[in-house]
Length: 350
Image (cartoon, rainbow, N blue to C red; front, side, top):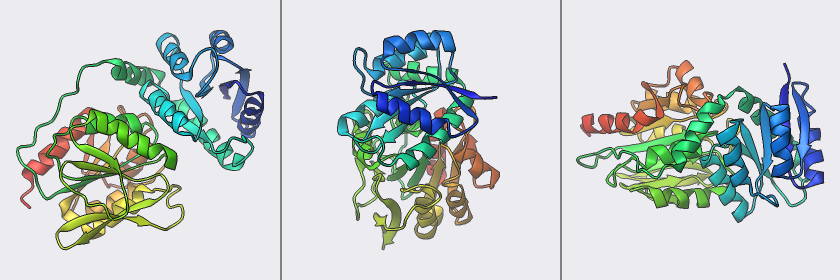
């Protein structure tokens, strides 16, 4: 059965390129293409596409406003198509918070540049998006629009533990939900979230605004310390290192690992080597298998490990791969992961 896709982009060239890319896969059928939100609105009602590819910045109605209307009135998985500009990154992050399934980057102003990479990514994400329950995305949007503060977990005292987290598709919202619940004295955290280099600094700043813990994009040599979260930059692998009793992060120069750079496997494997039982590993929603082997290595080294459950995951790929390997000590819904980590920390005697 074909996956029916609607393309919404104000550029005729971009619409043609995206259509050509998608139709290289026989499982995908482009049922229409619209130049703005108003034309797209009528097409959505008439064609009922399985997935919508939506430009981030459009005339007449911006992408965020239109996305809200889609998710409110006729929930449909939406993939944002964004150029890698600072403004585009901010808008795309907003879109993810308001119900978009994922994004694909237009790497250059010339849409033909880097087209092969974009084609493969777009096809993969359209297929994944077609399998997601739109109601889960709608619930995420409603949650983001509420102004009530999430419950904050309590931790009576700091510990020597450190926490490693890996995420991909759906992870930007999952991380905000998880990290915003943590107390100021939570042990140091290192995060790998699959995203382009131009997104990670803005993502870290966004998290810093809503969390009690401090959040920043990691730099080579940064210390892992209580009350701080380090986000791996989109351009480098991030590894854990230890000098005496001090943990730091180091950039890795390897190429793509487990399909990604930065790779969760690279981070988790280094944590197994240098932290062992002193670490907690957490793997969240995401496509593919990155992080599964690394989480198993952490568990084998004595770390406690947590995987997000299927029901709360936008894409149950990375957590499922970890569970299938026997890498997870605990399988938890997103809302329970923070409290599970707190329980582990309180029981820690280190």
